[in-house]
Image (cartoon, rainbow over all chains, first blue to last red; front, side, top):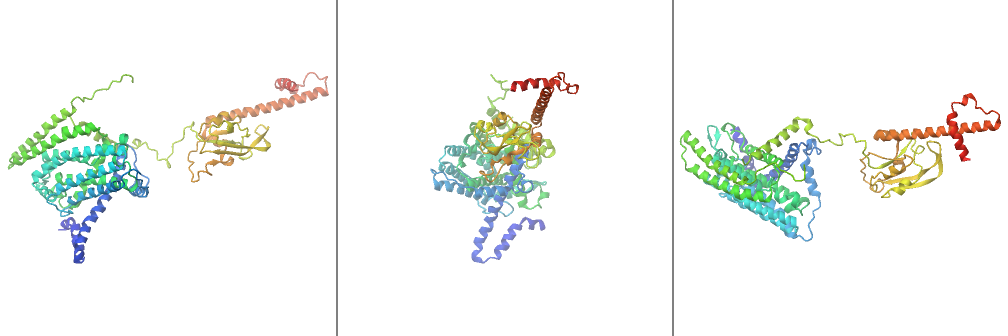
Length: 397
Length: 223
């Protein structure tokens, strides 16, 4: 009973607050009580993850990272925020002022809207839409519009190049992103994020029925996360802001608070795409083992989210930026076929019988082979003609 | 196989990440204001004026010959010569700078002033934390701000300072020897004038004889 109370503490609090408000204001208060925590908590996680990122990247490069503002540099996000708030906001004279002004707002707005359908705990979802996954991807596509608004309105060749790169990349990676989640939608038989999580929150011999524990779910999860990284312009897919070639990409002409908004939107998108990955493949707010089910559901969600954030930082500290042709080849020659194979494997999984334990193992192996063989073939094809040899120099050495 | 290299790379960064908490030598960063590395002896940035002894006004080596002022490529030195004179380290009467200003915002740290100074009076400093809130007044260094003791010079550039000190000690000795020789010659001359019959010099002055001999010819040449 106590564990259940802790699990539902925020839901109970909201009900309590609604009971004590006049009936005429109840709808408004209910909406505000749903939206404000999202608007407060996720930017707070953004501040925390920026600090973690700077410290973590520093350690990966054998540096200290920020350690001057406050003890161990923990007040660095506050200093960063004050800096961006007080900086001068410069708008190029020949920019399209209205669009230039609107682009960061549209981007942040779209980034926040994605959280509407993320179940961050049991009974904790802002809008339980029947087509939640579809809504999420539709909103995700709106960020492309905002990126191109920013790139186009700045009237700068670098920002335009960055925006075009961003569009090419986002459009290419949206296909494997959506196709890999189609497998989950197929198996769950619903587009509602809440139902998808609830279907995964069952246990067989203490282990949860997460999609990631199936071969198609595992492959789909990897495809989803790789495309998610590309979709949110996260390193190593941060070509739209390649410093060495196009300086900062589509937000080159933004300064001060507008730049901070772009920065915020980028991280919000990372969190929301991670949140959707958690929802679709990692059982959302459910615990992996039944004996951990007493831990409140929202703690599970945020633990998983932070694991994702740390993994993203780790990847950023490891991988160099891709080249544009590598990016496109990878999207169309590897990710897309693999996503289709995953859908095939999920379909086969659905129709193979699994009444007994042996049959379940056979089903697991068959589906794994269906994914592993094309993986090897496609990987060979992708690496063909790109054998890494010792480089010989004509004049050096 | 595709993905193998990524895993290797991830392991490498993980090793760096955890290693930086365990092995202290991995972190090469010097935490600057608290931790400082000793500057290399050859480091230099802006010129300063040397003085001997404890009084920067009395001991200032500069004789305001204004060679550095003329040679300075960006023209950052301003000197005004004094009307009166005072004895320098060998006792010779020399002028001194009434005003000696260096605009360090103009100085390009070329060290030409040091190269041309015949009096070992100007040297390069190693002090680099020079930031100030007043860029006009505070970056124009006056004579008093520029004057630094020879002990300070020995501390920042020991090798160079030792050479310089040896040279100056030799100058002092030469001058003293010269003065002694001149005095001996004058004494001998006086003695000769007094008593022309005493041709062989007294036995007590035999040791100074060698030094006196060239001095005498010098005196003759001067005459």
